Amino acid sequence: MKDRHLTSFTGMSLEELQELCKSIGEPVYRARQILLWIYKKGATSFEQMYNLPERLREELEKKNLLFQTEVDTVAKTIDGTEKLAIRLFDGNIIESVLLRNRRKVTACVSTQVGCAMACSFCASGQLGLERNLDTGEIIEQTLHIKNHLHQNESLTNIVFMGIGEPLANYDNVIKSLKIMNADWGLGISMRHITVSTVGIVTGIRRLARERLKINLAISLHASDDSTRSGIILSNKKNSIRNILAAAREYFRATHRDISFEYTLIEGINSSVQDATALARLLNGIRCIINILPLNPIEECELRPPDRKTVEMFCNILERNGMVVTLRKKKGDDVNAACGQLRLQRYKHGKRYKTRKTGGGNHPLSFA
Ligand code: SF4
Picture 1 (cartoon, helix red, strand yellow):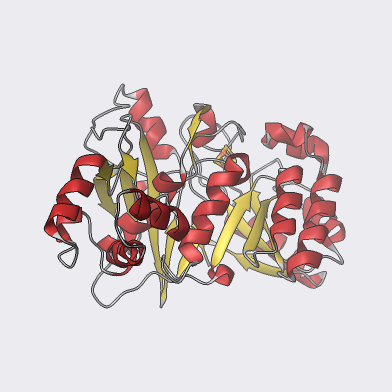
Picture 2: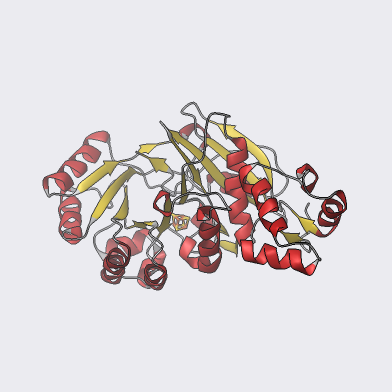
């Protein structure tokens, strides 16, 4: 297990690393040299940074950490999706997913260990929240995925759709997405980064004020508060009306269309009336509706509707002028939606130090 008391470099901004260099009597340009090794050359140890003086490499090795996490296991699926189980300094395991869709290579990252939102259909919500991930722990997921790509591939997109509610870990998420975007960092355009939220109104408003031009995805799942509260417990604090007002504010500030995620659940939110009400609710908002038939988990009785119902639901939305995407499930054979792996491990008493991998239900699916 890694020593938490050492300084981790992956959560640092350029300015912070420059300060650190100054504090140990090194020129500030060393900071860019080190970041180049981390983000562009895929270094995983200070030893590999051969253009740094040897005494500096040794000193850095003694007092700092390059990576504070490590890949525990990787599960591959027949559709090219790969799920990485990543071990944290405290032994906890989180999940990150690599998704391939033609030339789009996407890293889906987790932001918390567990989740307090308790969505009824989600494996991550079943165990509650343990803690927030720090910036380095979020960034390292993308680095592990990047270092895992084939030679002819490069990372093009990042989605915050793994375990946890990103806006409940606001500061670490914002800092990590700035590092992902920076020219000295991963260099991913803000337009290729998506933050998915269950609808934390204060967080959406704060995000709008950042004017970062990232994509915002809101998990809606119902068109009325009473149905939504039965699916998402946090809806009691964030009514649909307030969520949509915040979404409009986000659009005004960034001019980015909003994505609404809608998981179809049999007998709960998938009727003709539900589709009509959803179209009416979102009428006038610049948005895309992403429909995802539920990815069922063993621990909950909820099931997806049949194919005919799914098609009927999408058709009604389209007839009402909505832009609709029916998302394909990816990584079924490793349970690729978030939290399933962690839940399975917990249930089998394998919370720490296990050697198998799996997958989960936050919408880890792509059109
Ligand atoms: S769906 Fe997302 S917000 Fe809801 S419990 Fe799962 S991880 Fe948390």
